[in-house]
Image 1 (spheres, rainbow, N blue to C red):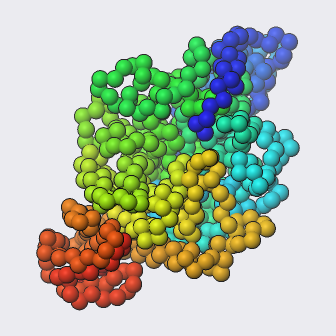
Image 2: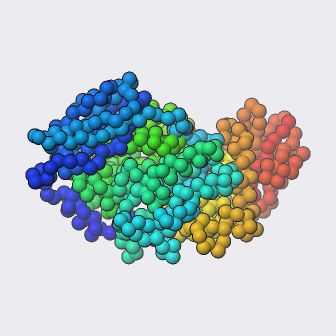
Image 3: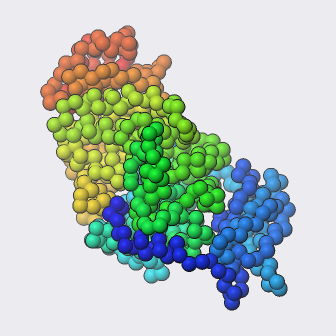
Length: 627
């Protein structure tokens, strides 16, 4: 994604920043698109802004006649193909079809707009530290309907599993058929990389033609990609997940859209995007945003520069853009019933806009959880983007975030030949005082943008288990990348596709089916059962997610922490060294006084002498203490 085809972007920018918007005198006004596509009565968000598009749609004079719906203002903009209508929906309004009437001379254009009744299905339920999130790329997880792998009328018509950069055909139906697999593993929430339409052409990156299978280049916010099954398939997936007691996380992208987006092809106004005299890429330097000594020029390049040339950067300071994005967020939760919101490239967005969008979601759905991606390496910068206790000039209202700080500490701690790993993990958690609520951070060991965890730690199976133990026993909301449970590996060099390989068994013709125990090796089954044991224990043991956390300074690369409440205490003792150690527990008296025995959660063995606990080399013990 970060390999830049600058020529294509220079050409695009030249197109966008030249020319004028003129009334097409010979074309009769018409409307071919309304966004949002519908709304609901009974919403708290009752003042909406419709974006109407069509040849000369902005030259019509609009009226609305419907009980309880008032047209408060019509906005025309640079491009005469657009009109923006501000509608206020009264609490007394009933569901039905509103007629938007546009007139110009003798011509009348009537456009229906549906107000729906809200249903009682669950939506915006959130995720908490009681959950275990599973992150998957739909295109690479499982294919349930080969008939939707490609469409002749879409910009990218490839479906070729032999090409790591092409679409492979995974879809929502395939994922839906694996819900029982995920539930059995102990997963309680599913996060997909974006499912929204990416009708993008193949792009030339690093000399290779690559598809938008990852989903981060939207071309129509109101359509789920047909190659994943479309809107109906997504709605059904969410319903089936809810029926199994699982939550669904939506991957949101506000910062940019795809180069093939319909409104990029016909911009409402030049300020719809961040425009520069010549193509300007973001610096990817997050320090300039929080640096009290930093320059405005550097900050602007970070936030307003384009992420890559084929992802035009949206200008959220434009009120029409902001309204469009906020309304789409609300529409998505209400329409599909998703429960939580992961925000892509959070730090590159306009922060006042993000606060406004977050507030709209949280006002409408008080239980919803929002956690953004800010790829930083220190607690101060990470805290800036969430509710924090630091005297920053800007105060974020985002409740959670992806915990890149703990991620970095965990994988560094477990790398081969790391002699001070225990301290790295301890120190990251010791900085939690900067957050209002660190339990709302989403923890992880790898994802679709990083090297796979197993490869980072040198394929050391003992250390693999230690990292997963930390993930599933420490504070926060744990998230695991698909395939980690079956020891999938690889690094991003030479490409991201290496860490986004197909899940074996998810596609017709696969020689191995690792969704089934019979298709896995003994080591893979052991890993799968290890994850399941910890995940289900966490799920079924409230102290493991809602209990307090107390950690002790590491000694001799041995790290110990406790999860505890009034009813239960669990001790997690990690020996990162290459030799067995007997740990004297006197220094843990604050949490162990009165405890007489322990059950090893992973082996079900009972320990009757807690004065000296033997910790085998490269092992994490999870001990449920008893008086």
